Amino acid sequence: MTRLILASQSPARTKLLADAGIQHSVLVSDVDEDAVQARYGVTDAHDTALLLARAKAEAVAALPEAEGALVIGCDSVFEFDGESHGKPYTAGVARERMLRMSGNSGVLHTGHWLVDCRATAADETSEDEESDEAGTGAASDGGAQVQGSGATLGAVTSAEVHFTEMDPDEIDAYIATGEPLHCAGSFTIDGFGGAFIRKVDGDPHTVVGLSISTLRALLGQANVRITELWPAQ
Image 1 (cartoon, one colour):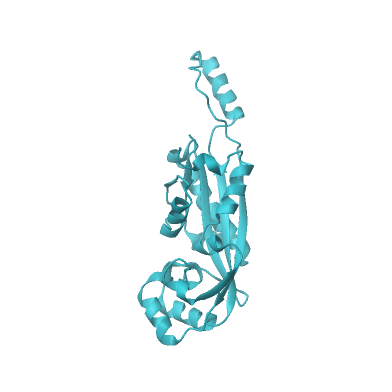
Image 2 (spheres, one colour):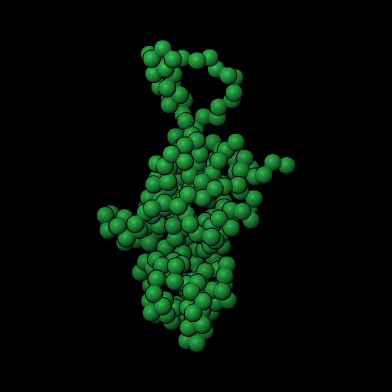
């Protein structure tokens, strides 16, 4: 059975996958986003989203629990007025951003990075050779072993988000829910924040934080059909 691991603690991403019928488990990466950005000095929102998605996916792929699975890491960065906006964390930052965003638009970039942790033909040949040299070779049990592609690849999807006019009292009430403090750009589309989004130009799943169609394309490059992750009928 093909296993998919989501390298994210985002409830919205795991719900999105579940709603799309995609079976998966969750392993949270211990990635310091600020440290990663400081190391590479990336300021472009598009590239930052991909960089952080890759860091999360590769951190989880290195864990023993990821052996034999495919790992997808995601990260979102909001581009507004030429600036990159990640999570605001504080009410003051969120309020300042939302006052500027009111009646305007920006672009939400979501990076995706897929790592195929399944054994490749080269891996299996190396293991067989080591076993033969050690004199511990064993007969095959006839079980079918699906070979991995060795893929480690990524893509970014972007969507333009148009906001309605928001008065300060509405913004304060939204911030009081706590929802925008840990979301890229200080908003969500699948929660309270959806009330302030007038329209989205592009894949709306991108704004949630994971594009299902992009995941399908990445899986395809790893020789996996997304239907393999659907529940058995």
